Structure formats: C-alpha cells, structure tokens
Amino acid sequence: MIKLAIVSPCYNEEEVLEQSAACLTALFDELVGKEKISADSFVLFVNDGSKDRTWNIIKKLHKENPYVKGMNLARNVGHQSAIMAGMMTAKDWSDAVVTIDADLQDDLNAIEEMIDAYTAGYDVVYGVKVSRQADPLLKRLSATAFYKLQRRMGVESIYNHADFRFLSRRVLEQLSHYQERNLYLRGIIPLLGFPSTTVDDVIRERTAGSSKYTLRKMLGLALDGITSFSVKPIYGIVYLGIIFVFISILIGFYVLYSLIAGTAEHGWASLMLSVWFVGGVVLMSIGAVGLYIGKIYKEVKHRPLYNVEEVLCDEDKQSH
Ligand code: UDP
Ligand code: MG
Image (cartoon, rainbow, N blue to C red):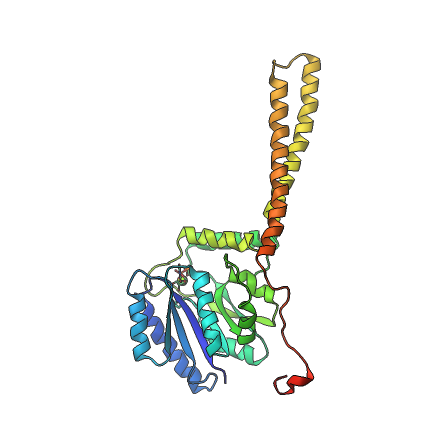
C-alpha cells in the first residue's frame, strides 16, 4: 500500500474544479477500498495565480473533504512550474505523485494501472494518449509536427505524452536538483533514466470551462521543449552561413565571367559579391558566437551530471 499524492495545477478552473474533486474522491475511495493506497493519500490542488474563484473553491474543498490539500502560488507561473511546485511539496508527504490536469481530460482508470506498474518495479509511468479525437484538429496537427521536429533536434521525449504521469519518491528527489528556469518536464523526466513504462490514456472532452493554454503559452512551451535540450538550431545557423559563403564564391566566378565578357553594369559586380560574402561571414560569425553561448548555457544550468538510483553498502543493510 502506498501513500499517493495527486498533484493538479489549476488556472481559472472554477467551472470544473468541484466536479474534478468529486471524481478524484470517488477514485480515492475505490483505491483505498482495494487496499492499493493508504487512507491518508491526498490530492494537492495547486492554484496557479487564478483570477477567478479557484482558490476559494480549493479552500472550501479542503474544509469539507479530507483528501483535499491546497497550495496557492503568488502569481501565474504557468503549467510546468505549477506542477513542479506541487510535486516538490507533495513529495515530502507521500511515496509517489501522479500529476493530472484539473480538467480531468485524462483517463482516471489509468491511475490504478500506474500504481500496479510501480508495484512491479517501475519508478516512472507515462500516460500516453491513445487517441487525440477530443483535441481540435489544429492542436492535433501542430502536436504531431512538434513531436517530429523535436525528435529531429535530438530531444528525447515520449510521443503523445503530456504531463499525466506517475513518479516515485526517489525520482522526485532527483528531480528536485533540476533547478532550471525554462522548465519542460516532458524532456527532463526521460533524462533521469529510471525504470519507466507507459499506460494508455484515453482522453476525453473537457467537461466544463475552456482550454487555459493560449497559443502564446503553447508556443512558449514548444520553444522550451527544443531550446532547453538541443543546440542544433545554432548549428543550423553556422551551416547556413557556410552555404552562403559557398554561394558567394560561385557568384564570384559568375561576376568575373561577366566582367571579362563586358556584360556587367558598373558597380554591380562589387555589390553582388559583397552582399553574399558579407552575409555569409556575418551568419557564420553569429553561429560561432552562438556555439559558445550554447556551451555557456549548458553550464549555467548546473544540471546534475548523474542521478543515483540505488546505493548498495554494508552500513545500510536494512533499506537495501
Ligand atoms: N494551467 C496552469 N497554468 C497556466 C495554464 C494552465 O496551471 O498558466 C493548468 C490548467 O488549469 C489545467 C492544465 O494546466 O489544469 C492544462 O491546461 P488546459 O486543460 O487548459 O490545456 P489543454 O488540455 O487544452 O492543453
Ligand atoms: Mg485540458
């Protein structure tokens, strides 16, 4: 039996929150009944600087419902940071954390499978969307394009997995060392490298309220998802610069030819050459500077170099 914490970020979710709490309570009752989780398991609603009554509802739920805990962030920090805040708080009070969006579009039945996978030895269990029919077409298309681009850029991530996942306490301990400002959890968790598996997540329509992911927030997340893990875009600039310089050499030959043949306008030759050549050199130089910035950027992150999964030593026989 584990003490489970469910962490749910809420931004302007007054329309759906009570309904979500009711569903989660039913789930807790069921799982406690099956002796999968202990009765002091809980859901931690993280209020991410909502402008509506969300925090009041959380306070009320906390009073009425023994499963409900709440956390209030001072301002809107965005989905990823809100989840992080919730996980870092919940990890000290529980054996494992499941993160799920407050709109409960994800499959609640998957949570029991996640716990079973944990019992079978997995520390990370990803909920993977089996079908995205509930998402609008544009969102589906852009998501697919993004996953492909991300893979090309060499970022390791789980296809069609959003932030519905189960993490054991020891994974959360390691995660707490990742102090980066541009947080993209879907990229960091695979980097940790603990035993992991997936379960199916049948996505439903939002039962109430509307999506809180504005186009701007989605683009920001996509950019973080690539630039926080890959310096390939910078290499792209260098290559582009090299191609430009190469083109300028070709043009140089052509200019020389037109000069000899006497077909060139006055001043045209030097203009053409300098535009391409200088352009190429500038691009290449920016790229070269970028390469160093890329390295500095990796350094300043202070990511831990390794994560200890288990320690075997004589002093500590009871726990290993
Ligand atoms: N969310 C948040 N902060 C934000 C935006 C969203 O905590 O700045 C929460 C939101 O309340 C929800 C989850 O993140 O619980 C996912 O948002 P949403 O359901 O609107 O996104 P979608 O499912 O449409 O991608
Ligand atoms: Mg949603």
